Length: 146
Image (cartoon, rainbow, N blue to C red; front, side, top):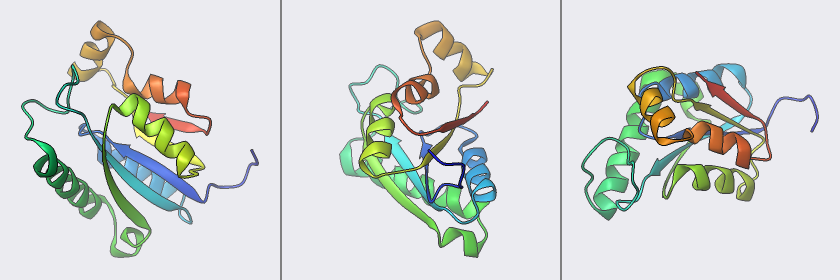
């Protein structure tokens, strides 16, 4: 890898608080990069899904896309929004994010970690956090904002 700035940056949005921080960081730190905001909808059969009782299929994907659009509108000026692409996929984030980053040829990943709040406590209690799994499984650099 060279020391040049990345051309393509992936920002996974996992239905977590503080996702705006990861998107803002990517937009500010990599002003010339194309940014993809990837919203990952956790399957209904997953042990931990993003925020409680979930609706089925298309409705959940539509809600995820709406959430991503709101996130983008809240952090990006109109010029920056032109270089952000929104994608929605379903799966377990620890598997989906590294695979998506590799298959789509991203140079860098920026995401929020579990932090020290309730989510951080639950992740420590129940096992590894998603960010740690993504770092371990991704061949490209990953910036985790704690």
